[in-house]
Image (cartoon, rainbow, N blue to C red; front, side):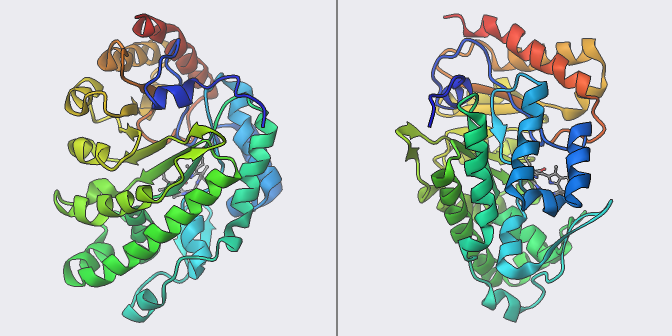
Length: 356
Ligand SMILES: Cc1c2[nH]c(c1CCC(=O)O)Cc1[nH]c(c(CCC(=O)O)c1C)Cc1[nH]c(c(CCC(=O)O)c1C)Cc1[nH]c(c(C)c1CCC(=O)O)C2
């Protein structure tokens, strides 16, 4: 594998010195890019894109051709894992993901098993192909959903506004929920390790729905299983540390607990304040985030001002690590020009915070 030309993203995650703050964006490959929509219509569907390594590679690279981003993220979805467990993932146009066979009774839960990784071969093939095509320009991030977030989709069968089904299970049959979560933890760990072996240079766990849990239950039903995943991850590959990022949407109040999972970095949504977060965890982990994605609709002056505010909140980087990101995925309605402004401002305005 060729030497990495730009390793600022990996260095920042490990709290090593960098000349300016690296950035990437959650959902950086997606519908706000016309070229994505074009490739998607060629592929016929979202899963048609994700399951074809050439298409997955093409859309992964699209945002990097337009913008000076410091990392690539595998184009895939967190729901490929429950799909490989036999739940039957479907993307209904305009409705988002849905499972044909959600976990709705005890028999289905007892029968659940970690998937045969051969069924996810298309993901690992995409990882290897993307690594080859990146040719050392920037590192590649692999990812998975957290055991809890996957369980939410597996039990609800689709997105939810109140999480009624999974919370019914949690409060009435916690034993069954624990069974789903242990299967998921085993599956996610094997899935991430296979991505690392295929060439992912950092991995991120998306706990998108951790924030809907009550305090105490978050630690028991989400974080404990994320920690199980991390405990068995490959942390060194190709002679380099493979940093792990844990992102819990709505998890700002639990940042000390998240930092204690053994991750290298904690991802924060825009409701957290980076200065306060840093005071709480010290420089034990790097922080990733946390611009409100809607800032990108505010015009150039607002984008530049908000980027400077986020950088100032983190403050002089010193022995810490900051990876700039949005606090959640970029909206499909974002004008691509807004992203150019964001990238320019992060790289230019952050230099002052890296002078020792
Ligand atoms: C909860 C979740 C999902 N998927 C994911 C999460 C965790 C992150 C988060 O909290 O947003 C993770 C994900 N999904 C996708 C990526 C690709 C990599 C990237 O560029 O960040 C990643 C990292 C592609 C995608 N996954 C999806 C799209 C849009 C699909 C399309 O092209 O129609 C993309 C680009 C579909 C998807 N997939 C999922 C939903 C709810 C949807 C529909 C949402 C929507 O319509 O915006 C489940």
